[in-house]
Length: 634
Image 1 (cartoon, rainbow, N blue to C red):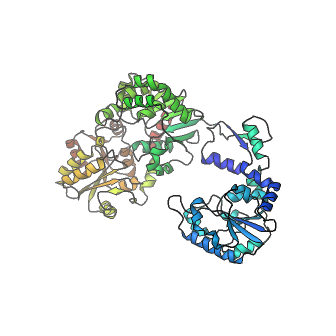
Image 2 (image 1 turned 90 degrees about the vertical axis):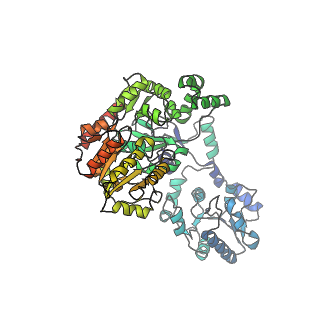
Image 3 (image 1 turned 45 degrees about the vertical axis):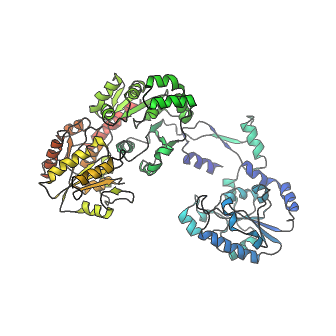
């Protein structure tokens, strides 16, 4: 039906990218409800010709893992016993429970209540019923095409709506909804006295006795059988797929969120893509993107033969370089791309994360416009973290249509890797200043899953202490952020400034860097003066509680946190490194030497109020961001 079509297309987000046809057809399983001869035959066979037959099909309220011991189950059993006492000899109620729930009921204890026959198909047997009793199950949507009475026995409505919820408000349904066994009994014995014609028209308009043959002849034989068809809805806009990695709370995820909050997302259809398994720990981050963005989940791994897998292992352990790997397994890499995206109508593919060799090679296989982002100095990433492969990046930067570097400073690094620069473009990180400022003004709080070097209550006391001067840095707990060096510098600096405090906040941790930093702080006897925070949903409100900001990194892509702290109103200092350098120099910021001594100097300048706020025109800056992004789309 049209209702289901609309929600299937919207909920699975296949509009605009799927090119198939929609067929409006009745459910083959509902065909039995139009077979009057079979109904009569079965009632006679079962000795029910002179009986009033009720079918009760309640929703399963438990889970396959936890079983069914619940308050609702107890109420249901009580109502069944009470109903059985009141049912007359010409009445019989057949009960169909979920397989996990069947052990709840001993039918030997009932006189008028029986189980659905196990040897009959459920819908074949349901067709003999004079009345269906259900609750929140979808079965009544199917049974409605019979025109017979439907009762929704929603005795636990408040609990069910609180714990699970429904798609359609119960109050909008035409069916009676008794609250106890006496009201149910009264409804069972009443004739149908409601009008469900609009409901049937909405949900059952294509059901018929010929649904199966019509559908099979149309799909298998290609015959026109009178079924209504339509194209999958499309708004005609360009479709852009953006591979976002695992959406961990880090700078890359923040950069993508900021970009989509800055560009005109109504101009194109943007689909954020990710591996379903990899994104599970960070699924909440999907809710932080603009409402008009879509999602495209990648499910399943790389389909490979044993030989292919051996080749891939050799590549992973760098025994094979990318050239040899693609010579041997290039066909499989191409097939993997086609498995995930082959029939989807995307016009542009953006490998936004810029990491993970498999993902980098996969998105190089399209003949559509493809772009790879560079968020950091990859030569330094290779040297210091070993999380990139120069041969893979060389291949990618030469084969993608466009290479997008987020600052002018890392243009040279990307060019050295690719040995060309005619396809390298600067595409700066967006900075949604108004959104950042708005979030910074919200109440500052830590989350249930926030990790801290203090108890969460004590951590908030640390942040709210007006007698101290708090210096904050924000960045993933990772070696290149220079957190240990910052702690060492702060240790020396704080010897002369007893009221100084340091806050280090990050969204995630590279391996066990968070734990290592915690141990380092303890070894320096600085636990009372340094606060660690990991995973805070609104970091901007925490930044607002601090007095100044320092970036202590050894290298960066851009250092977005500098702009965020500036927007919140803090004076900022950065080490003089690739990435932040251009932004800071352009806006009259303070840079200090990339060393412990340089950081100590920066801390002194911040403490003494010698650092002025940056002079950034964020509107002009973001206009340039949009212009640069639009250039990538061409």
